[in-house]
Length: 400
Image (cartoon, rainbow, N blue to C red; front, side, top):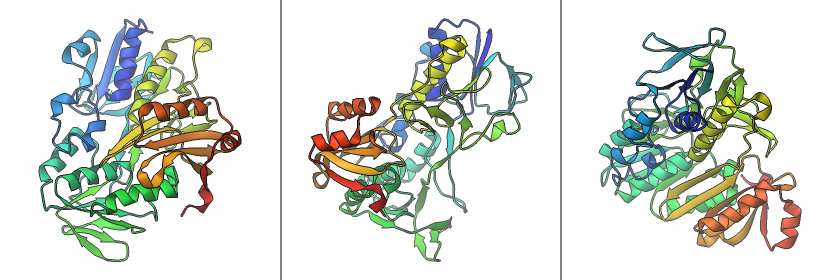
């Protein structure tokens, strides 16, 4: 294998490129990215960058010297437009082609949008800088979506003095992922600070004056941020022969086709630790999966290792530090195993079948939540855990 292409130059793609070199690959290594900037960290965009606490130069994932040491054929500012599996070539928007013997796909996701013009999204450095220029005391900001990204941006805007309205279609924000009780606790953090949080409302379009709801009501705003989820960047793979379904479908080794692997936010792979396929949009997972895909691409087939991580994410909202391990979606029960929800210092465990499938913590030291990671790794019995502890448990089916 003398030619490897990595398409996608963010966390997953960079991790794959570095791992290939670290594992001894010394052939041609092409790294393609559709943004003009060298690889940078997206996590601070909705926090430190939006709050003007960090400038863009702090986001670089590697120094120019580090990138130069990788001896890359670096193609930045040019998107991939097609993949020919038979010819083993990636087509680029500038008309060129990148031949390969091995390929890692890491093209990430893009924000969902609403009908209408003029709304902000928050995915790239440019997005964050544009919105931050608008934020000022008294500005009327409508945030559509009360998920983690929308909540982080709302918290920053509130701290900067904006009048913030958050519109969320669900009855309880994030209930599908973290449970109704935890979702209501997160909701109270917004309401107590004067954020106008409206749940159970659907936005039909963005207008020149703000947004229009499905019932016809119009809400005026100076600026609108749409944070209603994302879509995998897989359109360029249409007709390639790869199986696409809410991402590039991969096996437990992250392989999508012979010598073609996928990693990061747009990869849907089978995680044997949880016995299900999943697509994870978290920074930690992107880097770990990029490394796993690169190692498996280079390894003999019988020496490949399944990618079976415990997903991890964190979020900062107001004075709350939120951390979570595991796969919380589809849980059947939630139990507070330490602390108290009302005090916003607690650990909640999540049941899937008869095992601990996840844990979420607010306001506790990292070492506290890491103890629960081990229970997830070992598939600890939920009922044994319940018998051993005095827990406040809530069946998920009772959640709105």
